Image (cartoon, rainbow, N blue to C red):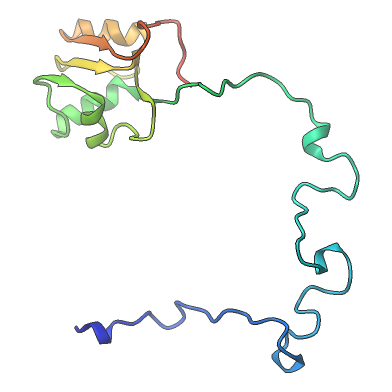
Length: 163
């Protein structure tokens, strides 16, 4: 195969509609916009506009509070970590860090850190260096012979919930 032989499959690309180019084109005169009215004109942005009626996003009550500085943790259960140990994606020698968990496909790179939860069973002895862990997850890891080091600005808060 040569570079000049590369081509899209038939039907993969479509010609752009050229509107307002005469009646013979099928999209002349009003160019598919109908007659008159706000939306037939240019510069229209009517997202959320309900014809002067109070819009639904203003009619509905707002509840709760979301901090702009909230952390978005990748939540990870011990059962999934054990599966990764068994499959050879993770190594138990040394510390298990967020970078290793991301490389193993267990955590998201874009998140603010990793938080361990105790669902599932961990049999492998390992040292974890993570941003958060539930009280029961820490107990399960220590029961397996491992340890947990919480990194980040604050101490491990067993009462905190993962969002």
